[in-house]
Amino acid sequence: MHRALRVADSAKYNHSLVAAMGYGGHVLVGLATAVILLAAVSQVLSYRRGQSFLTRGQLLLRLGTALALLAALGLTVYGATAQVQWSAGGLSRSEALSLARGVATYWTAVLLLLVAAMAMALLDLRYVRAAQHRVRAAMYRNLARLQAELRAEVESRKTEAEKEDGN
View 1 (cartoon, rainbow, N blue to C red):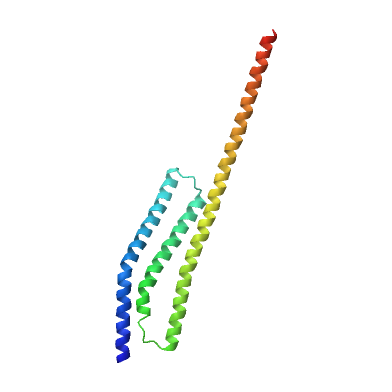
View 2 (view 1 turned 135 degrees about the vertical axis):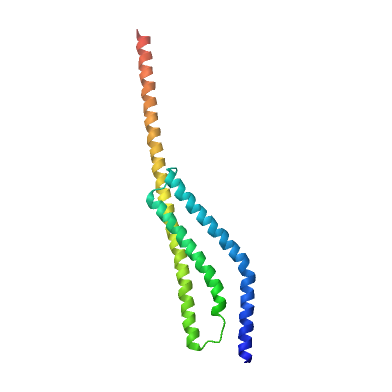
């Protein structure tokens, strides 16, 4: 009976601690979710209007990154609040071991979602860098063509001036 009271008091303490820290954390997660959703909607709208430099593949990659981040945020909030129920105590050794494996698997899945989001972001950066390289190369080609045209025009004016002076 005394152990049951300690477990109940421990669960109340954990719950009040999560509640106290949870409000600020939930506000931050809510803000992060709003920013991610607004950024995704902005990307889709600019793509549909034709105002975006993104290809369809890049847009899908960015939306996949946003989805992975949102899933990781949601799972983090759920895992933080569910941990109060998980740590209620009163479990046998085999139940505690099973619970520990489940918790490790859960947080590994969250970590893998975050790693996938980072990998997609790095791939997106490569696409942006390649597009920037193509634009820069086109600008240099255009500049070289303009320089050649200017040189040709200067040469033609010089030869015309020499012909007029020669007459």
